[in-house]
Image (cartoon, rainbow, N blue to C red; front, side):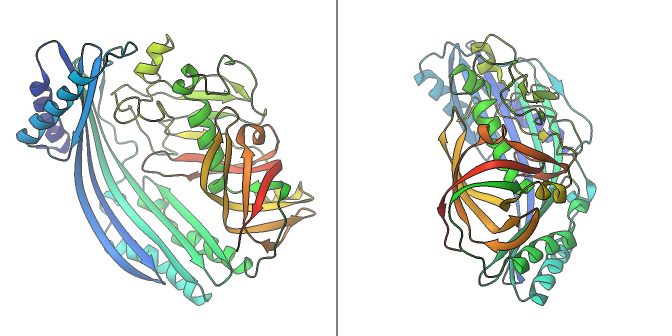
Amino acid sequence: MSAEAELKRAADRALSFASGDGRQAEIVLIADDSKLTRFANNEVHQNVAERNVEVYVRVAIGKKVGSASTNGVDDDALRRVVEQATTVATLQRENPDFPGFPGPHTVTGGRAGYADDTANATPEQRADKVGAICRRSLEAGFVAAGACSSSVTETAVANSLGTWAYRARTHARLLAVVTGETSAGYGMRQGAGFGALDAEAVADEATRKAERGRDPADIDPGEYDVVLEPYAAEDIVRFISSLGLSGRSIVEKTSFATGKLGEQLLGDQVTLRDDPLSEQGMPRPFDYEGVPKRALTLVERGVVKAVTYDSTTAAKARTTTTGHAALGGPGLYGPVATNLSLEPGAASRERLAKQIDKGLWISRFWYTRTVHPLTVTVTGMTRDTVFLIEKGEITRPVKSLRFTQGYLAALNQLIGVGSRAQLVGDGSTSPMLVPHLAIRGFTFTGKGEY
């Protein structure tokens, strides 16, 4: 029996247990075969493999909706999880905005986003990638840590209306942090294919940053022009999308775009799309309600053109779903874009730095948290080496800084956009293609210790 047939059988059995009494049901099955090689102190210390199947069930009794999940696909486990979801539904208040499950939709076939070299990757092949990083780090007198992973994920969605959606995809990822006594460097590559993992490039990127970052100088907080590498720029795009370009934030009036669709709210160098079918990223042909996905332009030259919807937020906004339902229904953040792409500009990374008289070159952000959703103000720290830019040249390393910055304002203060985009972010959930960004007047509010 094929993998798709096995998931179809489980979905059909679960739906049969949920039938009757005018009930509707939705079944999401995720079968994940993941393999991971971790390394630290310049050597492999762990190699693990896991096969897991998750089943998420939503049962609707009229406008009362309950959900439950399990890891079993035998009849007893499926019957039990359906009963749990049904019990939860009976105890819920009616949700007047629940439109029923969408469908019927059928989305199957195709190998976009599936690569045989990732599906067949061996521990030895992952160790070879790791070895290239550890050797380079050791030669330079540093310590490397990180991970190399390869996975196959099958996702299926079925509901009482006849929806059936299935796809298999692969994901390969290699990341490294190279550290010394006073410096650190980061590098990462990912993609559907194992061939996307250029270990030499990751080793070179992380080690060079650590080498150049030795003995960072102290620097005072304040406003600085910045060049953000894609690892840092990704954070801005992610928060702008989740807080401002989501149907849930629109209907709850917590978005900067509420009542302003069609207006220019961002700089004219900003064109942002969600392109779930592009093979440049990691294709996702349907969402977690089984609705077919399509390319969606969210922002065009600074003008907000659209936001993401699932079926529930779309019903509340009196529009149609865009195919952006999250796992388990509306969820914590509501509908989210999963394959964002920020359109590159014309400037090389060197040219971006040349346009800054005094500023900072930032590798990435970490521990970022929302301060104010309407302005998409976020606070966080820089990480893995910050460099000073003086008269257009990257000169010397400085210590990390805390920032508190409105990301909406940042995208209205662009100096330039890099000419090459990189696939960054968490590729298992929301990878995105993002170039370097140069931004005027980024606000730093505190010092770091290293």
